[in-house]
Image (tube, rainbow, N blue to C red; front, top):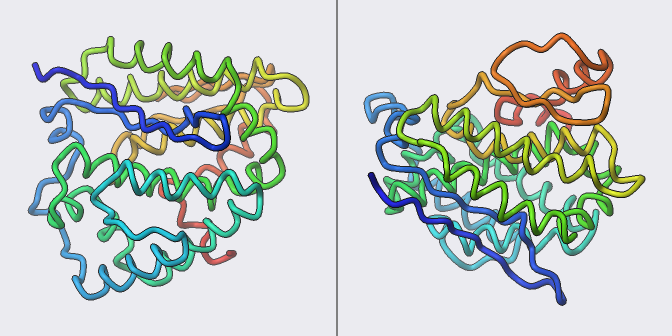
Length: 274
């Protein structure tokens, strides 16, 4: 079986390392199981792809290619150090990208599209997952993010989160990752593991909203091209995320409803309000 290689893209902001920038690998066999066949691929217009890519890059100050996930993620996440204004500027760029692609947005940010543009299979799903997570952060999770950004950013840069990065990813890679189901189950466990850092965060950062938000942020990285749609994050009344592919009836009805309302499949149902 292909050796799993842990890829952490970590860059400095001041003296801090951004351990929330995680790019993970899964075997090619699982990638194929997670991905629609080429027969289901609807081409993304080349002219539109180049125009919209250049527009988005200009908004975020990026001069590289989308098929380089480490550099692209670095450029996107560098906006986070600018506080809420940086996040809102990033989300404005993402909204303009969605409007630019229009009905081709799903296709133009799909794994198969990035392979068509020259990315290898690993980089392709990492890039697609990156856009999927950005969709959530800027749409379904934007309320929680803007209201609690100092807590999110400080927790990401805390020692417990730094430790969780190592522990959670080690547990993830300890799973068998050869089928779609195995990857999805490992992904939901990974999301729960990272989210628990917000449960143990000092007040006022240990709120259920942020526990759910972090869980969804990680979970969406696994839901590229419509995959792993049965896994979900439900915020329990006690303030911890329960990640499951089953319906869970316990917990606060308020937060379960809130999660149902704000959790996007790809983040697009809220675009008309942005």
